[in-house]
Image 1 (cartoon, rainbow, N blue to C red):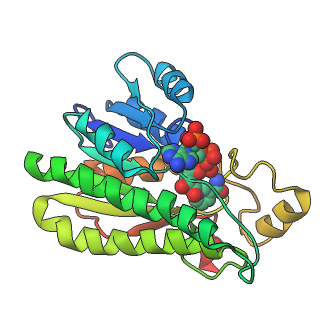
Image 2 (cartoon, rainbow, N blue to C red; image 1 turned 90 degrees about the vertical axis):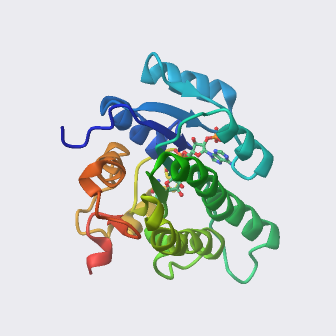
Amino acid sequence: MSGSLEGKTAVVTGGTRGIGFAIAERFADAGATVVVTSRSSTSCQEAAAALGAGHRGLPCDVTDESQLSALFASIPQVDIFVHCAGVSSAGSSLTVKRETLQHQHAVHFLGGVQGAQLAAAKMKDAGGGAILLVVSVWGLGGQPQTLAYGSAKAALAHSVKVLGVEWARYGIRVNGLAPGFVATDMTKDLGDKVLDKLLSKVPMRRAATPSEMAGPALFLCSDDASYVTGHVLVADGGERAR
Ligand SMILES: NC(=O)c1ccc[n+]([C@@H]2O[C@H](COP(=O)([O-])OP(=O)(O)OC[C@H]3O[C@@H](n4cnc5c(N)ncnc54)[C@H](OP(=O)(O)O)[C@@H]3O)[C@@H](O)[C@H]2O)c1
């Protein structure tokens, strides 16, 4: 069946809400056993229960190397790894603090790359797998006020290419998904003025829903994309086509 994930186990960081939960739901519908993670054990349990019997929710702060290692040690089989955990950050590049830069890079880049390494170790032994790193259009261009967030996503987008090339020999595909503007908790407090300005650059003139990110994620992680690796798929309502 097209897009089937039957028999696969998928780990989704940041899988308790927003884009990550929409991806987890779509993967579960496609037949995968899904492990969702976030910092909150309550949210993990609730999200796993919402996915249905057999799915798991395990707390893990992706900025903590030992928590990420323990997470992967507790999951015997990992066929798909999605790094979707994230927090946004915006502010002047004149004053952005070193701690902000470090935290953004810890969540997005270091968390994503360490997760990918831990997943790849299991996938290599099993003969292959699929990794999806959720980046952002703001990591593909020089959006003002996003030095910390954008540079962390840019590093992650670069990793997609390096890992895609390096791990192809192990049957591991590594791709990226670059959402544009998606209506989630992350974007709900932006305010009408900022929202209007952002959406004025989007040809579709609207934000995406989280589930509109789930289809591209399923494609990239399923055998439908068996010859696609090292690619960042942009899903931004046409913004970057301008
Ligand atoms: N929304 C957009 O417009 C947009 C656009 C481009 C890219 N993205 C990217 O898409 C991804 C998902 O964003 P979203 O909009 O769905 O955000 P969201 O609704 O705020 O969800 C973020 C998820 O990440 C988890 N998380 C945050 N920090 C974490 C940490 N240190 N360790 C583990 N989990 C952590 C959150 O759970 P806890 O808080 O409970 O830990 C939550 O599950 C992010 O990487 C974001 O940068 C979003």
